[in-house]
Image (cartoon, rainbow over all chains, first blue to last red):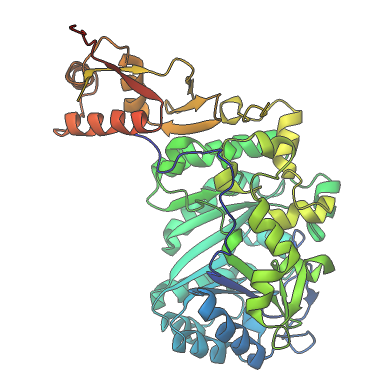
Length: 375
Length: 99
């Protein structure tokens, strides 16, 4: 009758270094698409021979040093991860190390053979980005003709190979009216879930926000409610609308919204240049680079880097603004620390969407409640 | 147990009902909160220090046609959980001191 976990606001317990559950590998600084909203802004690289890619040796080193710290899985992303010249070798290493595998791809290079290689991992999950229910819309977002049908074929290949597959759809003004249609398309393609992302004001996303090609906070909240309360009950697919937890209905959270407690305290990024970073944001913000793979021992980076230690000790209690008063902060942890830092140079700044919602009087009052000041 | 079978809500705890009929119980003293489903909301509203758990169960069964066979156990467990986290209390039996 009650939700799974209490939204406790007690003092932070003594800080212990959490396990390093996941490494996010940003395998290449290049991408064979040119998406208008990309938060990393990789270099356009049609065939993958013009960009920096993570050397296999460093990939292995990072995994080897992460396993004693608790590593259970990896995510391969980019840039476009399938542009990596030794992608199938990386998959072999992941299988050998018995790690769970997540891939985020635009699908252009996901042939039946690649899908079959991915399917060899015992625990695998792939997200394919499709930003329109038709070619015109998707390719307006993604910048390359033919990419729509290629992405759809990638989904077919993955589903046929037995890979759990998700479509990721980033909501913007040019495609928001295709939300229902993308769910129908996803049903036809046989995927497991659809995730609706919000354009973050990072890298290319900044410009989209500036020209108001993104949705307003008011519109995003309405769209989220539409997905949760109207679309989700009508489909067997799992639907996730990726706005902060304060806006999600409790019934949706309790049903397993796919985004429980934020995993940031157990995740580390490895960027294509061979550096550890908070995540891909390290490619944009040098402050978020924590060391060099193979040179700096990962155990020392994970346990001792001042920013990681600060996050471990300070989240969520040091969050500021609306986040400091939010009852969901123990699950949400500020929604996206990388985004918050990118926008403000502060690890503790509130998430932009929640801040704007608060200023507009749209933040759910039932989710607010600060602990009284100690006298 | 030296307590009577009539739970009573912590008077400082606030019930915040949301649009999907779920609700949050919020304790402003501690800023702790818990989400409860529509049956939980109905139970909460019946926890008044007068009804026994079995009275509440009977009313819930009358109100919710899909109430499960194990409603008594589930509601008892729910109230116990609320009590454990100080959202609910039980009055103690009055004891008479004989000199």
